[in-house]
Length: 257
Image (cartoon, rainbow, N blue to C red):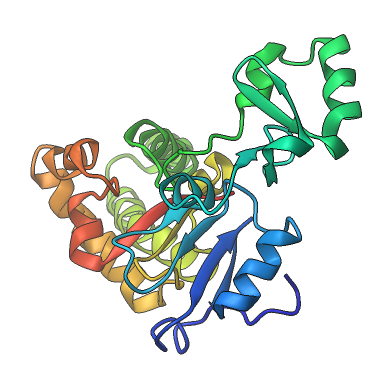
Protein backbone atom coordinates (compact mmCIF):
# COMPACT_ATOMS: atom_id res chain seq x y z
CA UNK A 1 0.00 0.00 0.00
CA UNK A 2 3.01 2.29 0.02
CA UNK A 3 2.01 3.85 -3.30
CA UNK A 4 -1.38 5.00 -2.05
CA UNK A 5 -2.15 8.34 -0.42
CA UNK A 6 -2.27 8.30 3.36
CA UNK A 7 -5.48 9.47 5.00
CA UNK A 8 -5.13 12.85 6.72
CA UNK A 9 -7.51 15.36 8.26
CA UNK A 10 -7.34 17.38 5.03
CA UNK A 11 -8.36 14.66 2.58
CA UNK A 12 -10.62 12.60 4.85
CA UNK A 13 -13.65 14.58 3.83
CA UNK A 14 -12.62 15.30 0.27
CA UNK A 15 -15.57 13.48 -1.33
CA UNK A 16 -15.93 10.15 -3.08
CA UNK A 17 -13.49 7.34 -2.65
CA UNK A 18 -12.59 4.43 -0.43
CA UNK A 19 -10.82 4.81 2.92
CA UNK A 20 -8.89 1.96 4.47
CA UNK A 21 -7.35 1.24 7.86
CA UNK A 22 -4.96 -1.67 8.24
CA UNK A 23 -2.26 -2.36 10.85
CA UNK A 24 -2.62 1.11 12.31
CA UNK A 25 -2.18 2.88 8.95
CA UNK A 26 -4.95 4.89 7.27
CA UNK A 27 -5.24 5.28 3.48
CA UNK A 28 -7.48 7.17 1.10
CA UNK A 29 -9.28 8.37 -0.80
CA UNK A 30 -8.84 5.47 -3.22
CA UNK A 31 -10.75 5.26 -6.50
CA UNK A 32 -12.91 2.21 -7.21
CA UNK A 33 -10.25 0.99 -9.65
CA UNK A 34 -7.42 1.36 -7.10
CA UNK A 35 -9.46 -0.31 -4.39
CA UNK A 36 -10.46 -3.26 -6.58
CA UNK A 37 -6.88 -3.66 -7.80
CA UNK A 38 -5.56 -3.81 -4.25
CA UNK A 39 -8.26 -6.33 -3.31
CA UNK A 40 -7.46 -8.48 -6.35
CA UNK A 41 -3.77 -8.48 -5.41
CA UNK A 42 -4.65 -9.66 -1.89
CA UNK A 43 -3.46 -6.46 -0.21
CA UNK A 44 -6.79 -5.83 1.51
CA UNK A 45 -7.35 -8.52 4.13
CA UNK A 46 -10.73 -9.55 5.50
CA UNK A 47 -10.05 -7.88 8.84
CA UNK A 48 -8.94 -4.55 7.34
CA UNK A 49 -11.44 -1.77 8.05
CA UNK A 50 -13.03 0.12 5.15
CA UNK A 51 -15.43 3.01 4.59
CA UNK A 52 -16.72 5.14 1.76
CA UNK A 53 -19.38 7.87 1.50
CA UNK A 54 -22.80 6.24 1.70
CA UNK A 55 -21.81 3.62 4.28
CA UNK A 56 -23.31 4.11 7.75
CA UNK A 57 -20.12 3.15 9.58
CA UNK A 58 -16.68 1.63 9.20
CA UNK A 59 -16.77 -2.12 8.54
CA UNK A 60 -14.29 -4.91 8.19
CA UNK A 61 -13.69 -5.73 4.56
CA UNK A 62 -14.96 -9.24 5.32
CA UNK A 63 -18.27 -7.90 6.61
CA UNK A 64 -18.59 -5.61 3.59
CA UNK A 65 -17.93 -8.49 1.18
CA UNK A 66 -20.45 -10.68 2.98
CA UNK A 67 -23.12 -8.00 2.53
CA UNK A 68 -22.10 -7.15 -1.05
CA UNK A 69 -21.07 -10.41 -2.74
CA UNK A 70 -19.72 -9.92 -6.27
CA UNK A 71 -18.81 -13.52 -7.10
CA UNK A 72 -18.50 -16.96 -5.60
CA UNK A 73 -15.60 -16.03 -3.34
CA UNK A 74 -14.76 -17.41 0.08
CA UNK A 75 -12.55 -16.24 2.90
CA UNK A 76 -9.15 -17.91 3.43
CA UNK A 77 -8.83 -18.46 7.17
CA UNK A 78 -5.04 -18.46 6.96
CA UNK A 79 -4.12 -15.29 5.03
CA UNK A 80 -7.40 -13.37 5.24
CA UNK A 81 -7.88 -12.93 1.49
CA UNK A 82 -11.01 -13.59 -0.55
CA UNK A 83 -10.43 -16.33 -3.13
CA UNK A 84 -12.68 -17.96 -5.76
CA UNK A 85 -14.21 -21.01 -4.13
CA UNK A 86 -12.80 -23.40 -6.76
CA UNK A 87 -9.25 -22.32 -5.83
CA UNK A 88 -9.56 -23.27 -2.16
CA UNK A 89 -9.46 -26.31 0.06
CA UNK A 90 -12.62 -26.74 2.12
CA UNK A 91 -12.42 -28.31 5.57
CA UNK A 92 -15.49 -28.34 7.82
CA UNK A 93 -16.65 -24.69 7.77
CA UNK A 94 -13.36 -23.09 6.74
CA UNK A 95 -11.54 -22.51 3.47
CA UNK A 96 -7.82 -22.31 2.75
CA UNK A 97 -6.30 -20.98 -0.47
CA UNK A 98 -3.78 -22.95 -2.52
CA UNK A 99 -0.89 -20.77 -1.39
CA UNK A 100 -1.68 -21.37 2.29
CA UNK A 101 -2.20 -25.15 2.07
CA UNK A 102 1.39 -26.11 3.10
CA UNK A 103 1.27 -23.85 6.17
CA UNK A 104 -2.23 -25.07 6.96
CA UNK A 105 -1.22 -28.72 7.03
CA UNK A 106 1.99 -27.93 8.90
CA UNK A 107 0.08 -26.20 11.67
CA UNK A 108 -2.53 -28.94 11.68
CA UNK A 109 0.22 -31.56 12.18
CA UNK A 110 1.79 -29.49 14.95
CA UNK A 111 -1.56 -28.82 16.57
CA UNK A 112 -0.77 -25.12 16.91
CA UNK A 113 -3.63 -23.54 18.83
CA UNK A 114 -6.06 -26.27 17.79
CA UNK A 115 -8.65 -25.58 15.12
CA UNK A 116 -9.49 -22.31 16.89
CA UNK A 117 -6.36 -20.86 15.26
CA UNK A 118 -8.02 -20.95 11.86
CA UNK A 119 -10.91 -18.85 13.10
CA UNK A 120 -8.66 -16.13 14.55
CA UNK A 121 -9.53 -13.79 11.68
CA UNK A 122 -13.27 -13.25 11.80
CA UNK A 123 -15.00 -12.22 8.59
CA UNK A 124 -17.84 -10.42 10.33
CA UNK A 125 -16.02 -9.16 13.41
CA UNK A 126 -16.66 -5.58 14.47
CA UNK A 127 -13.81 -3.09 13.98
CA UNK A 128 -14.77 -1.38 17.24
CA UNK A 129 -13.25 -2.29 20.61
CA UNK A 130 -15.69 -3.91 23.01
CA UNK A 131 -16.40 -2.85 26.59
CA UNK A 132 -14.19 -5.52 28.18
CA UNK A 133 -11.06 -4.70 26.16
CA UNK A 134 -11.51 -0.98 26.81
CA UNK A 135 -11.96 -1.60 30.53
CA UNK A 136 -8.77 -3.68 30.60
CA UNK A 137 -6.85 -0.92 28.82
CA UNK A 138 -8.19 1.66 31.25
CA UNK A 139 -7.13 -0.44 34.23
CA UNK A 140 -3.63 -0.81 32.79
CA UNK A 141 -3.37 2.97 32.36
CA UNK A 142 -4.50 3.62 35.92
CA UNK A 143 -1.89 1.21 37.26
CA UNK A 144 0.86 2.76 35.13
CA UNK A 145 -0.16 6.27 36.14
CA UNK A 146 -0.87 5.97 39.85
CA UNK A 147 1.50 3.26 41.08
CA UNK A 148 4.52 5.62 40.95
CA UNK A 149 2.52 8.28 42.82
CA UNK A 150 1.41 5.76 45.44
CA UNK A 151 5.06 4.80 45.98
CA UNK A 152 6.10 8.46 46.25
CA UNK A 153 3.22 9.14 48.63
CA UNK A 154 4.53 6.55 51.03
CA UNK A 155 7.94 8.22 50.98
CA UNK A 156 6.59 11.78 51.31
CA UNK A 157 4.20 11.02 54.18
CA UNK A 158 6.87 8.95 55.94
CA UNK A 159 9.35 11.84 55.91
CA UNK A 160 7.24 15.04 55.97
CA UNK A 161 3.79 13.80 56.95
CA UNK A 162 0.61 15.26 55.49
CA UNK A 163 2.01 18.71 54.83
CA UNK A 164 2.77 20.90 51.87
CA UNK A 165 4.75 18.20 50.05
CA UNK A 166 1.86 15.76 50.30
CA UNK A 167 -0.62 18.21 48.81
CA UNK A 168 1.89 19.22 46.17
CA UNK A 169 2.19 15.55 45.16
CA UNK A 170 -1.60 15.28 45.08
CA UNK A 171 -1.79 18.29 42.76
CA UNK A 172 0.90 16.80 40.51
CA UNK A 173 -1.02 13.51 40.31
CA UNK A 174 -4.19 15.39 39.33
CA UNK A 175 -2.37 17.21 36.53
CA UNK A 176 -0.81 13.94 35.34
CA UNK A 177 -4.27 12.33 35.26
CA UNK A 178 -5.31 14.90 32.63
CA UNK A 179 -2.06 15.34 30.70
CA UNK A 180 -0.99 11.67 30.49
CA UNK A 181 -3.86 10.51 28.22
CA UNK A 182 -4.06 13.88 26.43
CA UNK A 183 -0.45 13.61 25.29
CA UNK A 184 -0.56 9.96 24.24
CA UNK A 185 -3.90 10.25 22.43
CA UNK A 186 -2.73 13.35 20.56
CA UNK A 187 0.70 11.94 19.74
CA UNK A 188 0.12 8.20 19.24
CA UNK A 189 -3.71 7.86 19.06
CA UNK A 190 -3.51 5.50 22.03
CA UNK A 191 -2.45 5.50 25.66
CA UNK A 192 0.10 2.86 26.76
CA UNK A 193 -2.76 0.74 28.11
CA UNK A 194 -4.55 0.88 24.77
CA UNK A 195 -1.30 0.18 22.89
CA UNK A 196 -0.80 -2.94 24.99
CA UNK A 197 -4.41 -3.99 24.30
CA UNK A 198 -4.12 -3.35 20.55
CA UNK A 199 -6.58 -0.44 20.50
CA UNK A 200 -6.44 2.93 18.76
CA UNK A 201 -8.59 6.07 19.20
CA UNK A 202 -9.55 7.99 16.04
CA UNK A 203 -12.20 10.37 14.76
CA UNK A 204 -15.28 8.84 13.17
CA UNK A 205 -13.73 9.53 9.74
CA UNK A 206 -10.57 7.62 10.66
CA UNK A 207 -8.29 10.62 11.20
CA UNK A 208 -6.09 11.24 14.24
CA UNK A 209 -7.15 13.35 17.19
CA UNK A 210 -5.60 16.76 17.60
CA UNK A 211 -4.10 17.53 21.01
CA UNK A 212 -7.04 19.85 21.65
CA UNK A 213 -9.63 17.16 20.93
CA UNK A 214 -7.63 14.63 22.96
CA UNK A 215 -7.62 17.05 25.91
CA UNK A 216 -11.38 17.66 25.54
CA UNK A 217 -12.00 13.91 25.40
CA UNK A 218 -10.13 13.43 28.68
CA UNK A 219 -12.17 16.18 30.32
CA UNK A 220 -15.50 14.84 29.09
CA UNK A 221 -14.57 11.35 30.25
CA UNK A 222 -15.12 12.69 33.77
CA UNK A 223 -18.80 13.03 32.85
CA UNK A 224 -18.83 9.27 32.24
CA UNK A 225 -17.32 8.81 35.69
CA UNK A 226 -19.70 11.24 37.40
CA UNK A 227 -22.68 9.50 35.80
CA UNK A 228 -21.97 6.47 37.97
CA UNK A 229 -20.20 4.73 35.07
CA UNK A 230 -23.40 4.90 33.01
CA UNK A 231 -21.44 6.93 30.46
CA UNK A 232 -19.21 3.90 29.95
CA UNK A 233 -22.00 1.33 30.09
CA UNK A 234 -23.85 2.83 27.11
CA UNK A 235 -21.06 1.42 24.91
CA UNK A 236 -22.41 -2.07 25.58
CA UNK A 237 -25.62 -1.26 23.71
CA UNK A 238 -24.12 0.83 20.91
CA UNK A 239 -23.24 -0.65 17.51
CA UNK A 240 -20.06 1.40 17.38
CA UNK A 241 -19.25 0.80 21.08
CA UNK A 242 -19.34 4.54 21.83
CA UNK A 243 -19.17 5.81 25.39
CA UNK A 244 -20.63 9.15 26.41
CA UNK A 245 -17.30 10.94 25.83
CA UNK A 246 -16.93 9.25 22.44
CA UNK A 247 -20.28 10.71 21.42
CA UNK A 248 -19.40 14.17 22.68
CA UNK A 249 -16.00 14.19 20.95
CA UNK A 250 -16.84 12.28 17.75
CA UNK A 251 -14.30 9.56 18.52
CA UNK A 252 -14.24 5.80 18.07
CA UNK A 253 -12.00 3.18 19.65
CA UNK A 254 -10.91 0.72 16.96
CA UNK A 255 -9.17 -2.61 17.19
CA UNK A 256 -5.72 -2.04 15.69
CA UNK A 257 -5.50 -4.71 12.99
